Image (cartoon, rainbow, N blue to C red; front, side, top):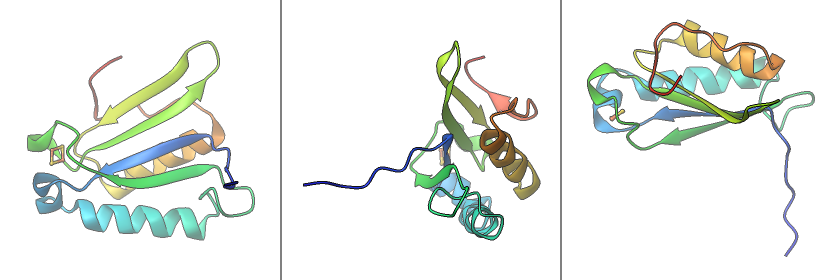
Length: 113
Ligand code: FES
């Protein structure tokens, strides 16, 4: 079997656990998906570099919607960042930073530094 692999700048995951869904994470995922499509940031668009996936619980249930991002960073290896209380403007800024391989927004981050 030969499957096509798309190299990306990073992977964003939006929690769809019950607590995050009660705080609007389904709408957040849909809005972010539409944004990646519209701005051609999704990996399957020309020039796009991002993957976006729904995830299960990310462990910050009382502070959702939660989002995490993984990307390869020079000198770091695999960089990860975890966000709580994410709204659409913040999610769009995170996506743009990953696309541009720039620094990730610091606000609302939790977990490993
Ligand atoms: S339900 Fe989203 S972090 Fe647990």
